[in-house]
Amino acid sequence: MNITNILFILFMVGGLFFFTTATIGLLRFPDFFSRLHATGKGDTLAVFLSLIGLGIYEGFSLTSLKIVFIAVFMFLAQPTATHAISRAGFRSGLKPWFKEEEKS
Amino acid sequence: MNQFLLGIGMGLCILVFFILYRVVFGPGVFNRIAALSAIGTKTLIILLIIGFLYNRVDMFVDISMVYALLNLIGTLAASKYLETAGEN
Image (cartoon, rainbow over all chains, first blue to last red; front, side, top):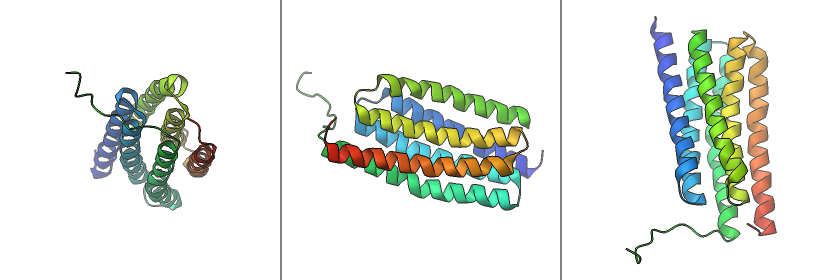
């Protein structure tokens, strides 16, 4: 059990944890924008952690260089896609959800 | 260490089945597109784990890279089309 395996297990468990929280947010939040906030930020961090963990497990080679390239690309691409779909939803008339305070 | 990778991959597959609920029953088109983007993100990690389990990472990392590019392009194209179409 050397330091590489410990780092790999830590990064992979962290990635799975953030994937799980993003999925719970996507399933449980009340409207489109809050669901998008949960899945956008959570998935970005989880993909970064998982890919860095797999790159550590692979070792230093061309394959791990490609894995790090995928990590950097996803760290740029995921907020872009989230912003684009959020702007499309806002311009096509979806209203944000407010807490109903008058009823209580 | 293969058992640990198998466990992580099975957890991600279970999460994909949970997100499939939002794809099928989600109100409106935008919820479905956001859930599909989340499924594509998890598929990228599952592909790399399959590559590590079969000892063919040098082949599967290219498939994973193409999958990341196609996921971004698909989400951008769908959101651009729906923005100009103006429906929900």
